[in-house]
Image 1: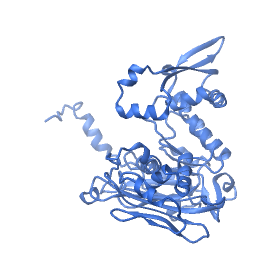
Image 2: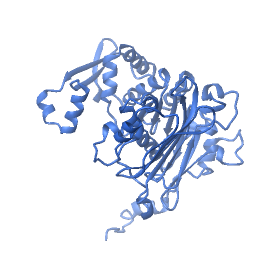
Image 3: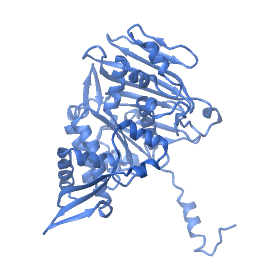
Image 4: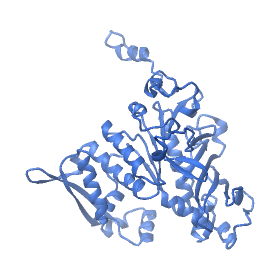
Length: 434
């Protein structure tokens, strides 16, 4: 479970910004569904980000996705001399030269027992290399070092780390995480942390991709129980009388594989299974059954199919997911039911999502300590605050109305007079072209 995470000098985030999942509101009516007790802490299942377009809410989600992906996959996905793909805050000459920073405080089992304990991980990197990386844990409540890695210095090991430490240090390239390298060496400490994140983290779902992923189609094809769940989800969501999902699958010919970049061919060989192309059709049952390709389905139907996999992961498994613009193509009722299902049916799962949907603020589904507002300063950097950071907010007052009144500083500042002048210029006989 994530207690909090912090980002600095990454994308639109310049100064250190922290998103916390620690509950600060005590509410007997919502604690049971929204909070998970862990070692005396109440950890929230949910955090959502509001803000104007280009304010940085999506960048905060992408930053978290980037760093968690780097922690888990950098050793296997990056070539020895490849860049880390890090992007600093670009609107400052000073920031461009500095590393990005990521800190995360989380709870999971001790690597040597089933006891749930606190861990703290720090990562600093540039586009070329890891500058600093460390991991602490608290097996008996007191913070202890597991490792500290600083550029151009030998790795400093905690006394509780034994075994093949030199192999781990030698494997850790400048452009990968030491945790990933340690997992590759099958070191129990690092494999434990690696497994925690690789098993829990489900990546990010964005509205920019309107198609259906091959991963989803593969799960539908391979997992009959999941396929049935998707069919029932679509039907229960009033997407039509859908009776079946037909998957047409065939292997990609060797001739095409040979034309792929060498990196892709290496990945295919490493997995030991030929890639397949998959096409799906939904079977609609009315007076008879009709096959409809996904290209003819509505945006709402495709969005619900997209969300089926994260909803299944979050409710069936203990996982962490990120959804950008969760309301995209969904009716208000469907959006609320999705969040309600997650809150009621998940155990030890967490969800971070971004949204523009103001009606959610008064839906009764969100607590004040789960709602974060983002705004951009006149220097171009993003700042984040929860409702609970603001004083004088009475319980009975509509959060939507407070948001619309710009109480939280996250509304777009639209200059309507300039827009009117710009788009009415030709209409009024004025030529704006130079």
